[in-house]
Amino acid sequence: MKPRRVMMLSGLIFGTLALVRAGSFSGAAMGQEPGRNRHGQGDARRGLDVFVANCAPCHEQALPGLKVQPPQLEGLFQKKKLPSGAPATDAQVRRTIMRGRGTMPAFDQRLSDEDLKDLLSYLHNLK
Amino acid sequence: MSLKRLLLLILSCTLIAASAQSKTRRYNLRGVVVETKPATNEVVVQHAAIPGLMPAMTMPYTVKDPNALGELMPGDAITAVLVSTDNGKTSWLEDVRITDKSGRKNAETPKTRRLAIGDPVPDLALVNQDGRHIRLTDFRGKALLITFIYTRCPLPNFCPLLSSQFSKIHDDLMKEPDVYKRTHLVTISFDPRYDTPRVLRKYGLAYLDNDKSGFEQWDFASTNPGDLRKLAYAFGLEYSEADNQISHTMVIALVARDGTIAQYWGAQWTTAELERALRQQASAGTP
Image (cartoon, rainbow over all chains, first blue to last red; front, side):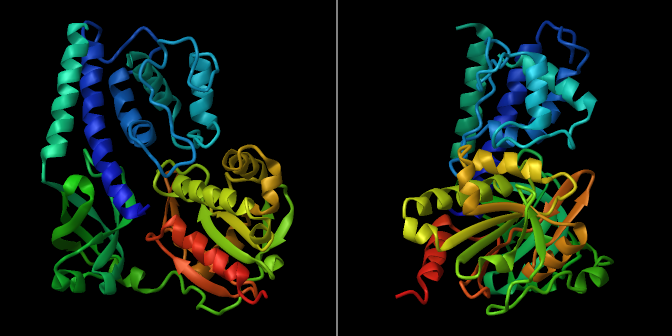
């Protein structure tokens, strides 16, 4: 494994997938009040920015150098259980993001309450 | 298939196909020079996020024009065009321009002067994942591989990659008890405010498959900010915190069984190299 090459390659993949995500979001938001959904008061449109900056680097690309492959998050709230097996609830997802889980780092020092609210709204839009 | 899914599929295919077919992509880069490496034609840049490519990070880039590289000094604010070909496998900086030289004076004062090969490791106390005091000198008689991380690091190609590959090395060595007992790994956090022993223990267990016996061969430790600065200085590590994010360089150090520095790696390393060098040091001087 050559970390510099991996960084560049993953950056490109990340960028491309971020664009795909933006397309996915636009589709998911069709017919809804712009940037809002029925889950909480978060702004899903801003949640996309939070997602791209914080979640996509790990959850949107293959990372063969990591001990545990971060799961894809499509349809996260469409199933009863999260990839970890825990119930797919806002409270559980919030806890995982803020405290970390396994090799996933904690984001409690990085995301504000507003960021988290917007991110959760965006995650609910992921089909 | 719904119309929405079909549209998304077409969009995805178009974007991925466009990405795959594109031979050369160009991105504007803006950042500050951390270090120049004339021997390898590289400049290490702490740069802002590159929209559509990567978040803000510090990493080395090739500069093909040696004259452009020669103009750069640590602390210079620069703009450049990042050229990427072959799906990111090859990249370099072009059109490098210095936009501000006022940061030079501060940067010219070296923040680190790492120990030379053959120097003894510093005898500083650390606190490990069990809340126990350890010293790097405690491991004399073993080959020691040291690296630096912080557990909150969100960039998969930095701390998570280091810990994952140290985990692989640990797992490989565990299969050979003779080598295992003559080697030790230490992961040091430069974020002691957040990375308490409890946090380090949880982090370590995640990389040890929840097998706490692994801590006998792999310590996760930190120390007070003052001693941490001394350690960073000794190993050539640079780190700084702003807005709850830590920018840092990558350092891996191999310590020989006699407690002296044997080898360093920066951003360029492979797991096979680390493991091979660790094994060599572990067997050095044994019959």
